[in-house]
Length: 103
Image (cartoon, rainbow, N blue to C red; front, top):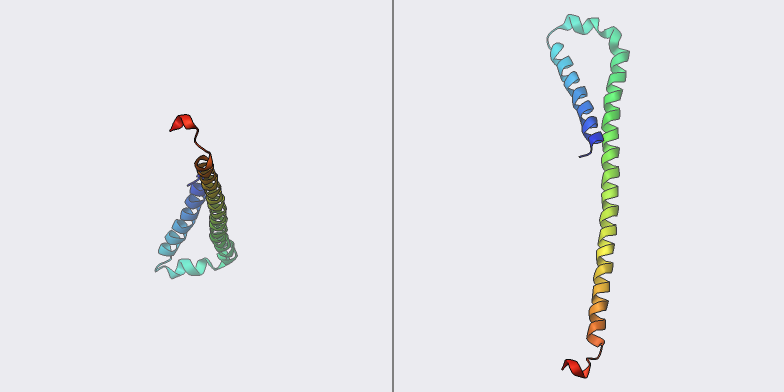
């Protein structure tokens, strides 16, 4: 896994850990919950950030998958080309007449 991907997952995990701790802190304290009503616009942006991280991960995975398929197709094509060249060389070796000194 690349360094950028590891950093991305660390940020993603920190976001979820923060969300978990926040929900545990609000578990039974309704006074704290009611006092946080003024923070709702901030929460909207924080959840939008989390959704953006999720979308970025899906797009990043899709791009990596697409690039891997292209690389695999290129390697398969190269392998088939090399097999064809090897077959041609073997056929050419079979068709060359043997000189009398080789018998």
